[in-house]
Amino acid sequence: MNKTIRIIGIVSLALLFTGAIMRFFYIPNQIIVLGTGIALFILIILPSFLVFNLNRSVKWKAKLLHIAGFLFCLIFIISFGVILQRGPAVFTAISVISGILVLFYFILLILKRNDILDEKIKWPFLSVYLSTVIMVFLNFPVELQGADKFYNPPISHFAYPKNSGPLIYIDQGHYNFHTVKGRLRSTAQLLRRDGYRVLPYEGQFESGKLKECKILMIVNALNESDMENWVLPTVSAFNDTEIQAVTDWIHEGGSLFLVADHMPFAGAASKLASQFGFTLHNGFAMDTIRREDYFVRTDNMLHDNSITNGSNKDEWVDSVLSFTGHAFEIPDDATPIMTFSDAYMQWCPDTAWRFQNTIPENIAGYSQGAYKKYGNGKVVILGEAMMITAQLAAGLSWKKIGMNSPQAPYNYRLLLNIIHWLDGKGE
Image (cartoon, rainbow, N blue to C red; front, side, top):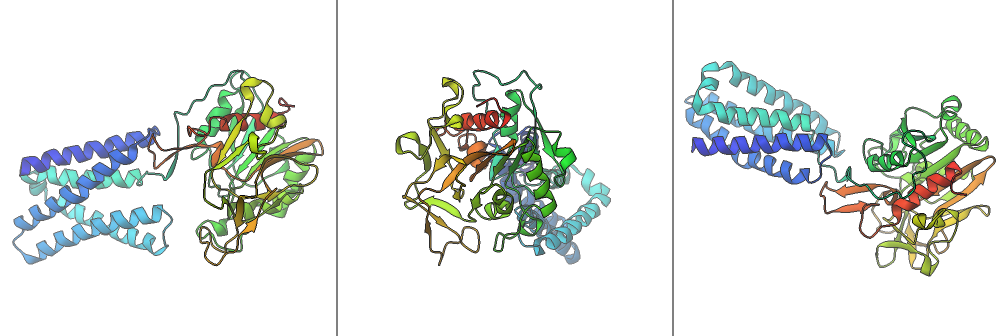
């Protein structure tokens, strides 16, 4: 029996360690490796460790100690996972307290050097101890939407030689749901392949720093107050000083690429968008029969213009696949990229994804993508973010969502064409 537990312990450790490496290098399918390792740990190694210690314990106090250590370990694993998914704040306290108690439990075991050095307990102890340590450092790294690091679509004509193009700043200073090292990893990688320099923008927007870049890209910014609970009212992600700085910078020749998804992201970006005449509705735009959101030229939902046509046949965009998002109204001097048909409605609930007692609004003619010139600068707004990312659902290589989806072969061209137009190369 001890030999079997030893082998299972080694396998569990190997799987968890492999999962840590896969996480570090953004290798797909880590959830399978990690899930198997965690399952072996929780279902076999940890219970076997408890039984082994109970059998060796004579005094009832020692038995209670091992049972408590077992329970605290389970509580720590569960609560730690919950807080990483932005669960209730009480789980943070539970995780900290149970983690400290588990640490003390292991320290007590380590102090009994004879037991740990004993061959009978050495491998079960190492399996439990090291598995717990690895899982803590892993931070349960399974993302529901992880970047597809290996997405590499063809680019027939690079806009610039490597690292020689204009600087694109991607906003990271407003509690963004999408970041350069997170869900925008593949997006930034694609833009760098096209020759652009891409850097994160930290902190609030300031005139002096904005002058360093040609294009400012803001994706799903939030106010700090809306980080935990997506309920009304939605507070602007940007203060008045920042909005004025961005507006002046664009008027003087800067280019803004503003991407705001469904509630609360649309609401958080609405004040900035209104500076340029756009009205963002803080809701969810969906087909009434919940089909995939395809924008195609044949039904006039995808428009013929500089961005969708590109500068050559290899940049032509024939269709765009979107993933919910919101619908917005555009000013008269803006050009639509994607327009909703009368098959779509928009729900504006008081809590994200809760549509009970919410009356939908008709959004025929509203847009999910549009652009315009503003002073000497330019503005492009998209009402959905996943369409310009390449992600893997739960990190599984066959669950592609975004530009990497087999149903979205033209999405990456749309992204590049938008950047080219903002840069002045796509006119």
